[in-house]
Structure formats: structure tokens, C-alpha cells
Image (cartoon, rainbow, N blue to C red; front, side):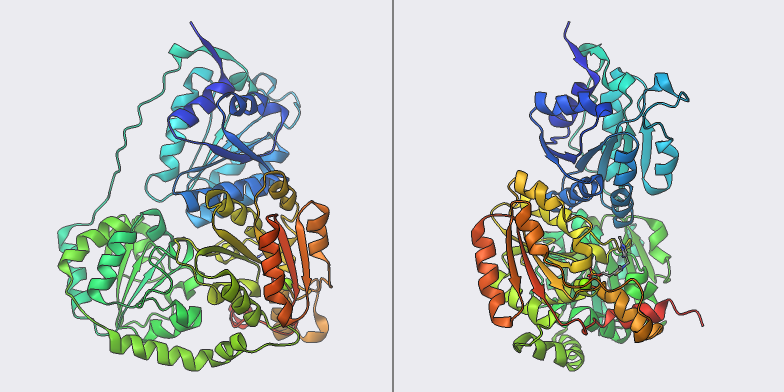
Length: 556
Ligand SMILES: Cc1ncc(C[n+]2csc(CCOP(=O)(O)OP(=O)(O)O)c2C)c(N)n1
Ligand SMILES: [Mg+2]
């Protein structure tokens, strides 16, 4: 009979049953057998320079590929370094399988190398966690892990694999692979609630549709298109749902930006949210008027009334619910309302529209984003990371692809440093497309060493640093709330980040003038290498989000 080592068995199961072909992580003695399994079963490993980046890239893999991303962490510090990425995926509701080594079970309480209680630390930030105690049961544990990551509201799961399991050989016949039928379980609301929702939609005069990550993960593109085009409802797709219907669809209000959305919300008589939580990113629903009728679609019933009562709450997969609603809603047209939305927003955005067209010295970040968009175009993937920088990128870029513009630090965790790992995954999945990362100079520092990873693995992402020489959002917030003469821990100074990238084997450009932006981008893409275009921008500029954020924390 054939014997197989635990580490090999784990990889064999993931490759053959879960179709895992790429994983992210850093090596370690405790997980050696798993690493050898990757070799044996020809699974591509993207070995990074900080475990945080491995987890973040695996999360992004789930977003861009629609499959479940996998990362591996070694025991102790490998695990703790990965924690930030795990929490980010948890708050993002993104499926992820985290495989972790640990000290040997045999050595428990002896003071073994990297001995710590990982499981108790991970509990509040994962959907499911387990330690496997028996090599024969590895496939069964993994089968549960992959199901848990995706089932219902998605999220990260954690599986601890001790050396006493990874390094043990078992008879293959005694470790059977559980069946994985290609079944998709859909939750649908009751007919009565659907009818109620349809009636509200059919009688709306100023409706607005807001979609979130749930739209992206329920693969709703077709159904959403049918629903939106039939009802004629103006819409905005946020978070990882962005792009499920194109940003420049005639009914999309992305041209009005986040400000336009915030101005539209209190004017709407009906708001439909789908797979979108009403958390602080949407002012917890506080600017939804009490008279507005709200229909909320979510896989998690707890979300249906969270922060804002729903007139109709529809529990289910966004795609399934929209499919059930589509035949019940009337053919309609809300062009006059759409026109009002555009007019109201454009009066507030005049300054930004003007800045896009005007060369500035020093370079204005709005102008920088506009020049990038002009050169890179819509057939590309944009990733944005930073404070103020996120606002400029999210409003300045448009893509025709699903998840084509992602503000990685604009999620619930507000986690800086996510940009480089996300862009890395975007390029791995879409090698034929341009991937443009706009990074704040502060945020760039967290995972800058991943340029080495991108050089070693030939992942030619182009990163533009919006270099305002500061932790800009925090600096400008302090200027407002404490005073400009007491700014603390917020200045960074002018640093030549492009030289760091050159030193790691990538391509670098340094830009201080408007007319240099596009030629520098052109050369960066042409180089075929991971590149950094370090653009010095106006340090006095802040985004409209910053004063709002500063106000939100004022307690007296
Ligand atoms: C990991 C992490 N550390 C600190 C913060 C707090 N923070 C929020 S915005 C910001 C400034 C970001 O600076 P930069 O990346 O340069 O972007 P800018 O605001 O200058 O455009 C900081 C430090 C955070 N959100 N995440
Ligand atoms: Mg900055």
C-alpha cells in the first residue's frame, strides 16, 4: 500500500479537490513537509518577505479569482505577523484559508521553540478554527475549512497543523478525500417579502441602489444588469462589488464620486442596499432620512436592521435575491432623477473637475490621478492604498472590470499597507492587463520589501507613489483638530522610494512636474519590471474625507 506524509496529503487534497494552484507564505521548519508537498504536487508558491503580505495577497486572490485564497504561516512569529492580514480579511468578509504550523503536540508545555497558544488568539477574528490531531483526517479538516470559508457570509478560517501530523506517514487508503459535489446552496427570501419589496420599488420616484462586497461574491453581474436596466435605478457599487457592472454604465453614479453618493442618499425616497453593510463607511446609515423606504439584501440576517431599520429585509445571496425580484419589478425610467443627481453633485465637484484638467505646480493629487487614468485607461486594474490618496484614487479611476478599482485601505479595518500585496495578486491573475497601484508614501513603507517578491516572481506591477512627504490624512486631521503648530508623528520628509525599488531589481522614476507624469508611466510599463514612479505632490492638499474623519472622533 502507498504511504503518504501528512504535509503531502494536505497539498494533494487542496490541488485535486479544491483546485488550489497558487499559495502565499514564508518558509519555516515546522511546515517543511507542507513546503515539500507544494513541490511534489506542483503548486506555485509566492514566497514573500513578511507574512502580513502573504495573507493580504491570498485575500486579494479570492477577490480577483473568485476562488478561495490560501496562505501558509510558520509557527509563532510567522503566525503573529500574519494576524493583521487575517483581521483585514475577517472585516472584509473575504474567504481565506490560513494554514499554520505550530510547536509539536509532543512538546506541549515544555518551552518548545515558538510555543504559544495560537488558537485562542485567532478565535475572535476567524469564522472557524481548528487543530488537526491525526494525519489521516487532514483531508476531512481541509474539506471543512474550505466550506466554512465560503458558506454564508464568507471569511477567513484557520487550520493549525502540528509537526506530529505533518511529518507522519499514513496509508493513503486510510485518508480518503471527502466528496465535494459541485453544489451551490442559495438562500432566498419568502415570496411575501419579495412582493413587498417590489411594490416599494415600483412606486419609487427617486430610488437609489447601493451594492457592496456581497454583490461581488455572489457573482451577480448578469442578474444585476437585468435588474438595474429594467428598473432604471441609478446605482453605485462599492468595496469589492465595484465593477460588477461597469463604473461608466449610463446608470452608474461613480462619476459623481463618494461625495455625490452622500449627497444623493438624503434625497432618495427609496434605497436598496445589497451585500453592503451600513457601517462607518456609510455613516452607519445616519444620513438615510427616516422617511426613506429602505430595502436591505444581505446573506446575514443580523445586517438587515443593523444601524438602520429596513422596511423590507431580504435575507439571501445578492444574486439570488435580485433574480427573484427581477420578474416582479416594472420597466421604468428615472432619467430626470439621474439628471438631478448629476447636477447636484457637479456643483460640489466643480473644483475637482477643474483640477483634473489643469496642470499644477506642485502637482495636485487630483491631477495626478487624472493623468494616470488618461494614460492607463479603463482596460486595467487599479489598486489604491493610503489615507487621502484613497479618496483621490477611488474617485479618479474607472475600470471596465469587476473589482477593477479597489481601495484596499478604505475597508472596515482601514488597513494601510494592503496595496502592494493586493496589486501583486491582481497582476498574477490578470498578467495580460495593466495593474496600477496608487500608494500613499506612508503606506508604501509597510510592504515595500514585496518589490523583492515581485522581482523574483516577475510580477510587473506599476506603483505610483503620491508623495506628499507625510502621513497626510493624519497630518491634516491634526492641523484641523489640534492646530498646525502641534503636528506630531505625521511628517515623513522627501524620500526616494523609486531608488529602493531600483535597488531591489525593479524600475524607478522620479517625477516633480506635470509634463513628466505620462512619459514616466510609459517608461515604467515598458520596462516590464515591477516599477515605482515616485511623484512629489502638493503637501498642503487634503481630501474632503479628512475633515469628516477628524470631526467623527471629536467627543466634546
Ligand atoms: C496600519 C495602519 N497604521 C496606521 C494607520 C493610521 N492612518 C490612517 S491614514 C494615515 C496616513 C496615511 O498616509 P499616506 O499613506 O502617506 O497617505 P496620505 O494620507 O498621505 O495620502 C495613517 C497613519 C492605519 N490606518 N493603518
Ligand atoms: Mg502621504
